[in-house]
Image (cartoon, rainbow, N blue to C red):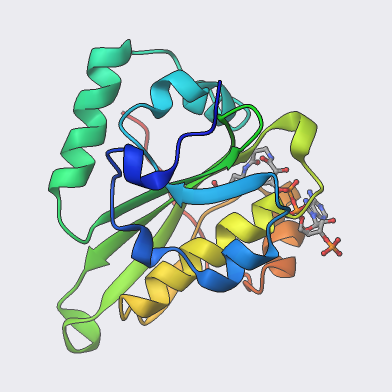
Length: 173
Ligand code: ACO
């Protein structure tokens, strides 16, 4: 498939939020941009399945979820790294911005659902996704950026500049 440029796509948020430094640091065959309404066809779900079970809801349900995120202003920032030669997604991640009353009506950035194509791991794409999401969090005024991860991913996040803090609690339905 030929590479599709940003101005030919319906994007989840403005590409102005993509860090220029991260763009410059990517290899020339790769492009980082907001998630697009047609990324269902570029292998978005198969990349996410590297992370966890990701059943295919079908294109209509996927697009409905994309639209629900896009319609919540300044809240969801799903982004992708795409191979220009294949026009396929090779890495993904999302920033979710939570508004609060504490910290002077502060906001917190939550990093979620990071995954890199198994064939592309170890090439700093995970690092670039985290840097890009942290950039969005910081230019949006978030006073901190946080995430949950397994023990085995702690060294990766430490390399990305994060520190272990407190505990995660969960109650599954
Ligand atoms: N243990 C130790 N170091 C690691 C690990 C690890 N498991 N993973 C990466 N690193 C190091 C790299 O060696 C590199 O170090 P260097 O700068 O000294 O060379 C640095 O971290 C950056 O690594 P990247 O090349 O950017 O890592 P990659 O592109 O492979 O992405 C990721 C890492 C996202 C964990 C990837 O392996 C992946 O998709 N794993 C499966 C899905 C997953 O676990 N996602 C994270 C879930 S947590 C969440 O979503 C909030």
